[in-house]
Length: 115
Length: 113
Image (cartoon, rainbow over all chains, first blue to last red; front, side, top):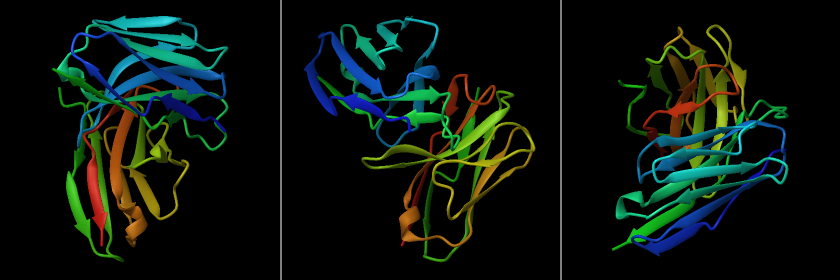
């Protein structure tokens, strides 16, 4: 069964700092990996999608990498801002999902960027 | 551009009551999903519809039923609500089943007392 782990569970950084969020998964047979942002009481906003054949994707100050063979992905946020404060979720779209749980989510990293 | 729209946003039910959560997408996506989110457990798939006319169980289907009304709409029904179904429910859609970007609605916060 695919398991997705996100470390750390919570992170507090001062404004302007570059930071890295980590995601690891146990089964490397995946179609893709998706990073989401979730604000308190809100839905999920898709940030980046990395296909299994890709190594990284970039959008503005965000860069996500994927090392499928080692079961790891990182989300790099450059020059963090208070508006980046949210929970970041990693979700893996697995091929060998048996019960058809196609997106397996981690429990997220809660980020707070302070002034 | 509305994306995925869920109704209602909030609901309080008494144990044993029934209700239907509605979801509609305007992106011409083929696949739709229902997830629940509980503290410390991440999002878990309840049911999904790979394409119009098909539905299948996900990881936690017990106590729920679904209907894919047409390509746009996918509803989730609780026939006899239980306190264990207190959760935040999210509807999502993707262009095809399994391997494309998923888009989520704003969620329905359900409390069963």
